[in-house]
Length: 123
Image 1: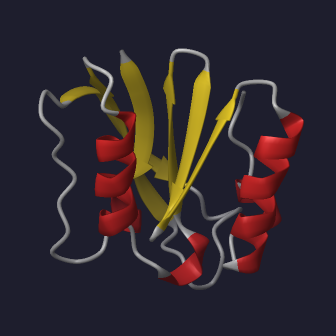
Image 2: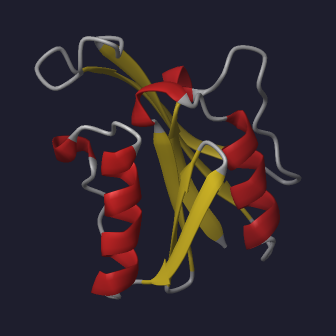
């Protein structure tokens, strides 16, 4: 099973993330007035989702094509012991606990403007 999160506001206008078999696990509205940047909205919609199957590349590509390229937005998901971090047009895959792989994704996030305190996905 593949499970992940995406922030609703991180999707490009008109974009759709709808891999086959997508199921919502939870949708929550968060007030992030204390940690959002000036360019980000103060309230976020957190969408927790899951998909049966193993099409990691297809899901990563769907997210990479749907994310807004501005402001360093990303989404992440897990498939077994693999962590996948997706930015607009860029995908990073590494095994949980692989600090070098995690560091590569974090460095890329910094380079595209993701605030440091938002580069906090858990392994």
